[in-house]
Amino acid sequence: MNLELKKLVTHRGMEGQGYNAELYADGRHMGHVLDEGCGGSPFVYWKNPADRTAVEAYIGTLPVEVFDPKADPTGAELWPDGMKQNLETVLGKLVDRTPFQKRINRDLKKYVCFRLPKDVEPDYRMIRIAPTPEAIARVRAKYPQAAILNEVK
Image (cartoon, rainbow, N blue to C red; front, side, top):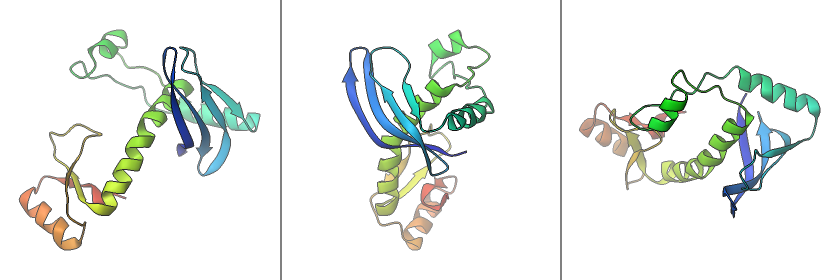
């Protein structure tokens, strides 16, 4: 199942970032999501109760999130065996990913984008030249170990 947020609008809340968005699964509108940014869980106004069941069943199949002690020592300490994902954590990741996804989609059209083995996702590098086959071949020749993001489907 491919979950995505559309029409995402973020705002400052009393206890962090809040947002409004439309939730889609596999291209189908599932409902409206509202997080007031007041420290509670987001509200999901489902179009159909069966949609909620399907999305929650899918989230139940996702692997636990394991925290890197160097990158997130608090997460690693609180959940040493990993954290089971739920609707709130998945929605939070979608909110964080949406602006990044817009930026990388824009960059992939204009520049050669790549990631070296030592780069940590979601970070990537780019060379400000059009992503022609010749330009990609030049980057590949200079950085043979690079994963060229323009080639990833």
